[in-house]
Every structure is written in C-alpha cells, then in structure tokens.
Length: 124
Image 1 (cartoon, helix red, strand yellow):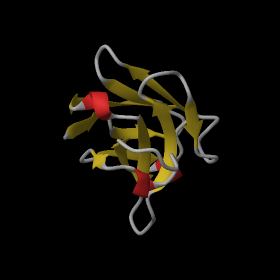
Image 2 (spheres, one colour; image 1 turned 120 degrees about the vertical axis):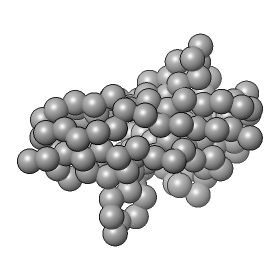
Image 3 (cartoon, one colour; image 1 turned 30 degrees about the vertical axis):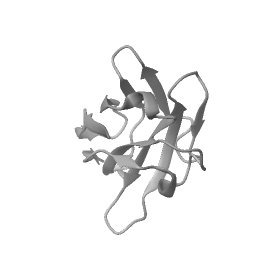
C-alpha cells in the first residue's frame, strides 16, 4: 500500500501563490507516477498535473499549465504543486494521487491511491 498525505492548503487572496506538498510512504517503489487533481463543490474531479516517479516527464491540464508547476523530490518522497496567480475559480479541494499501473495520466480512474485532500480557498 501507498499512503499519501497532502499539506499546504489555506485561504489566500486572488493573485497570491501557494505551494502544496504530497508526502508518500509505504510501497513507493511500486509507484509509476503521481498527479494532482482538484474538485470543487458540485463539480467533477479535474486533472491538474502529473509527473513520473522516476524521471522528469510531466503533463499538465490545459486550464493550469501556465500557472501551476509540479515537482518531485525522490529523496523525501514528496511531490509538490506550486500554484501561482491564484484566482477565485481555483477554490477547491486539492488531491494527490499515485498510480501503480500504466494508463491515461489525466484520468482519475488510472489512480489507485489517493490522499485525503487539502482545501484551497481563494478570495476575490
């Protein structure tokens, strides 16, 4: 099993930045890649960014590719998401997810392990 714990969420103003962190523990050697998703009330879970566990390949959702950056530190087993120029529409619960099998990186169904989520609220 892989355990994921997110941190770094909070209440910020429009234009501010936040850095979310996801700490992985357990069978991390079985992880192929890690992603960040978000879900606002009444909305479907939205893909934000993905990074392979070993290597530098990354992928971004169209709505955030110019403002969000995903990075990985294998020495700490962490995957961070830097959020810049935040907007009120970025308000959501942000989730970290890990996948153990090959599949579409932008689909939530490809991920077998999820964190509990961290709330990001952006005021106007």
